[in-house]
Amino acid sequence: MRRNTSPALPRVMTSSLRLMPMGLKWSLQGQVWEIRDAQRRYHRKKAPHMSMTPNQVAEFCLTLPGTHESLKWGNNRVFSIADEKMFAMLNAPAKGVERLAFKVDGDLFLGYTDRPGIRPAPYLARARWITMDLPYPLGEAELKTALTRAHQLVALRLPKYRQPEFLVPES
Image 1: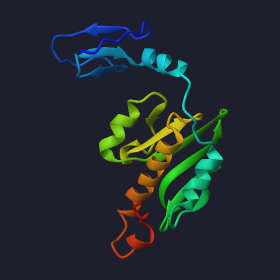
Image 2: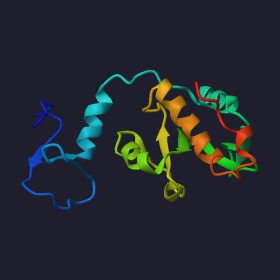
Image 3: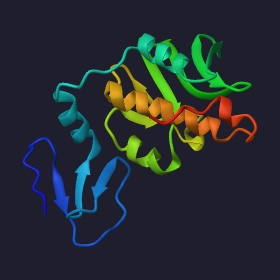
């Protein structure tokens, strides 16, 4: 069993798997229960890796094949392909916070939302979208990979005859 030496992460040992109240997170390795808020505070103290700015995210999204930008729902910058199929969105600063939202794989959705600073996107969570505030908790390389994957998820849902013009060549 891996021991947690951080005093900021309280834990409770259990002998069997059972449901816990909202706000608690569990780990199968050692069946350790950790309180999510304490975990967020612990990770927030660490210096984050270099992240992208909203303008860099917009520039990167526009480099993906067939992407165009539009303003919707007020001042939200929406990046879409093929007749308004959205894959990413930069929300205008509401209450001083600028957010990035994009589509993720269904298999990775819960893994992303368990990470500090990432949560399900309002109104779009059922379509497997996540949202994050500035500074983005993902590094530049990881964010570019996630945005490229979001673009590809939408492109693969298009009819077969339209897919080739939107697919990113594998490197």
